[in-house]
Image (tube, rainbow, N blue to C red; front, side):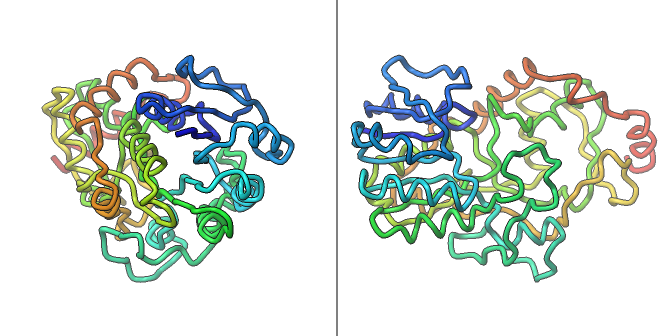
Length: 338
C-alpha cells in the first residue's frame, strides 16, 4: 500500500513511519525539511509547507497514495486544505485528533461547571461545548494556540464528500522524544532518592489515559492499513487507566524507588506542586472499540514502555528548563503529613 504521511518527522510521526515501513508499505512523507528525523532509507520525501498544500498538488497526484495520514492537523483550516487537495487524489484519509475534544476536558480546565461525565469516555461521550480551548493562552509557545481546535478538524474530515475519513483520538502520549517530559516530575524525585512524593489528594485518584508513543504509532498504522476503519472514530491508548498514584507505583517498580506517595489537601501543598485542574473531571477513555473492530494490540508492554522512557528521559533532561525542585518546602509539608 502506498501511504503519504503529513507531519512525519516529529515525536509521533517518526515511529509511525518506521511502523509502516516494517509492514512493507511504500511511504512518502511531506514535511518542511527542517527536522532531521531518523527515517528508513526507503522513504521518499516531499518538502513544503502544509499551509500551502495546493502548491504541491501535481507532486501528490504523481505519488497517487492509497491513504493519506495527517499527524498534525491542529486547525479547521489545516483539515480543510487536506480535504480540498486530496479529495480527488486518494480515497482514504486518517487524521490524528485528541481526547481533549471531550467535555470533561473543559471541566478539568475550570471553564465549565457541568456534572462530570462518567468514565471511561467512549467515542460517543459529550464533546466540549466551548471551542478554541487555548485562545487567550498564546504564551504557551504553540504556533497554533489561537486557532487550535480538534473538534472542527474532526467535523471537516468526517463530512468530507469524496473521502472515507478516520479519526484517532490520542491520549497523553509519552516516550522517547516527548518534549513535555510527562514522567520527569516524578522520576526526578525518585532519582534524587526523595523519601516521598507529595501530590494533591484530588490528583492522587484522578485518571487520564496515556499511551506509549510506539503503541500509539502502531494504532495509527493499523487504522491506515485497514479499510474497516473508514468513516470511524476511535479512542487510542492503554486498555485500563490507572489512577495517578497507581501510575507512580508502576514507575517506582521500574526505577527501584521505595519511597512513599503522600496525598495532601491542595491548600497545604507548596505552590510549585499545586496542579491546574479540577480533579473531579477525569480524562480516562474507553479504547476497546479499536481493539475489537481492528484487532489492534499494542506491541510494547507497559513495563518495557516505562523502561525505555526512563532511559531516554535521563539522557535528555534540560536543567535550564527543569530547575531544581524546592525540596525544603516539600520537606516541611511531608513532616506534617507523613
